[in-house]
Image 1 (cartoon, rainbow, N blue to C red):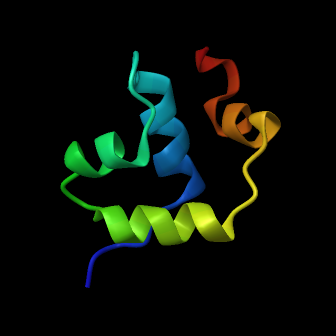
Image 2: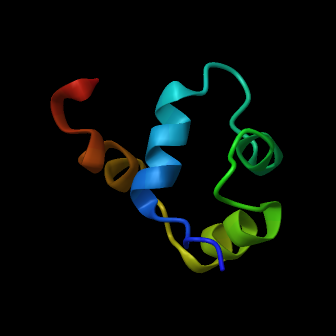
Length: 60
């Protein structure tokens, strides 16, 4: 079974993605996560801008 998607995984994807922030793009560029896994994660999480930036700390 593949690893579950975490908030950190998603936040890192958003940080490095320059233009395309779609779920499909994330799945196509990830070896660890399928489209369905990411979709289920995003459907069950309420992700606010504060939560996206918090794990990044001072790196931005």
